[in-house]
Length: 581
Image 1: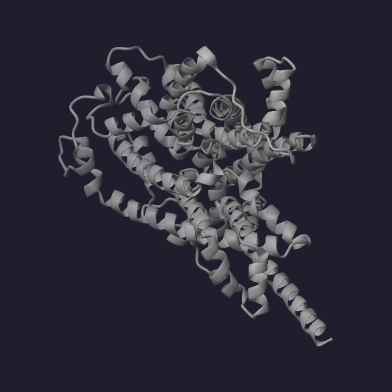
Image 2 (image 1 turned 90 degrees about the vertical axis):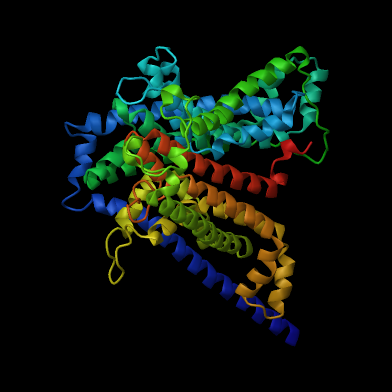
């Protein structure tokens, strides 16, 4: 009887601990995610700003303020998402389901473009294709005598190409993971029945991978419509506006009400398309391809097409990875992008001030702005990695160990809410939220704390996803045994969960570090001269015509991002099954 009473007391204590922990986590997530977004809406409903809604939607300037940028944004989202699914799906099919040569190398290279900042690819495009339409330096192709048309140098076409080459690796990762888990018995049965390759592709592979295709399309769409750097660098010089660049411009000139309205509408558009994608998938349930019967992997024999398809894959991958890196490195050394591969100099890296070069600006190694921005950026990456992983692990632990109830459901939904919010809109929300004093708390605008808090909240979905994987690695009976012996929640977390899953935590933290280090959309509105970050400093240099300095800084970001990403991929090798067999 005594044992039953003690067990009941322990159960009640566990329930009480779970309820308290869930309440704390929910309040933390509300403060990090819900209140900033709510603050943006409330700002636009104030008496002196509510007119911004009619100005944006119905005013005489609404066409230029909203509808033209909306059309451009939707065009970019649709074309880029479909192109990414096509390219990513093609490469995933090659790597997972065919006998293409060097498939492992293709698989590795296909994951690299997403590690490269989109503004790096945009700067590389400018170094190659820029013409003299807006003055300043011309690109290498025009420098060697080719006549580059305006539509190829500026505006919609280069924006679509650069964003597609940036985001297709995201589609590749999602689709390849789905193909790697598909039972090959389905394909073998179709082949025995006499079905040809195209029929198998259309009748079996595409239907059973539909969830992955829709997920890839939705995420690429959300990324493309929220991207700020590429349309800003390639579109703004010729007055091509998207919702993200229009939002930035409104807040930059002090029209915050109109900017917040555009940000809210941008969030709604992203949310609607992601919701529609989920509805398409949820409308059909027969996607199961993993059953109790094992199936050995069987690949399509490409026969004489092996090397042509390999060459095509290499053209895509070199265009998205190798060429931008080479161009960035060369353009950071060349006095002019018109002579990209001659008269190289290290001035833009290590040179001292020289009035005859770059208006007297010293190389980045002697540039105090760069040095300070590098320190701030690395500090920001480390701080967000640690804080993000802590909050993500806490939220994942709460929902995994104390399941059930509306609080757990609310924690799960709020945790992934930032996926619906474009980075630049999230940055605007934090200006509305913490840009002014709140009671006894001072305004945080221009402080390191604001960058860390906003970065932690924005990357929380990735933290939670990593936290879930970590919790799944640790059996619940281990923590239950420790709890019975009287170990507290903090003790169980630090002595059992974290040590046993440190490899996954480290990989997740590195990926969060990479995302915030190369991010521009989130921090471009939070940037101040006293608290600079490398991505914004590079963007400012590029906007002011100092391409060599911008490219040199971008190359530093690129080096940090790729090095850290390769370490993370090494730690997460088992999450890429298409590279394992």
